[in-house]
Length: 184
Ligand SMILES: Cc1cc2nc3c(=O)[nH]c(=O)nc-3n(C[C@H](O)[C@H](O)[C@H](O)COP(=O)(O)O)c2cc1C
Image (cartoon, rainbow, N blue to C red; front, side, top):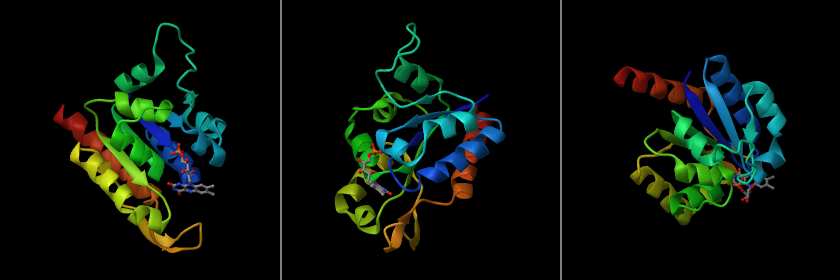
């Protein structure tokens, strides 16, 4: 069974990550969820645990299994990593190699797998040249940014910044895993 690491950050769109996790689990993938503190403010780890039937990781120092270093084991077992929704914050941290919580540490530890970020944020945040530069940096190392949609955003602004549709994200992830299996 292929393992997908799903990172969830502090955005209103976090509730949509539950649907992503549900679809991927039902389609036969093992989904291991890693949530930031911000992500947990919008949706509970219990929701993700119930949907994926897997433990949810929120704390880099919660080492339940003495024989493993959890962030390294997770990184090593993953076939693909998806961060959805991806906040401006996690994009910046990943682009700079900052590892100060479980999600950013796992992002630092993964190697040789496809990595997707589905940004979700206010239009001005998305258009911020520093955020754009950070995304460009991620693209340069081969990570894929799943373009957000134009929509009426939770803050009331209209513009680009709404997370891509769940169906689009799930299809992209599954296609990538399928193609990689075929290649292998
Ligand atoms: C109601 C609310 C909605 C937010 N939505 C977003 C969002 O969609 N995108 C974003 O980048 N930050 C958003 N933020 C701000 C982030 O939660 C904040 O920058 C946080 O530090 C992100 O941390 P994380 O990346 O560790 O989850 C929101 C904050 C609040 C209070």
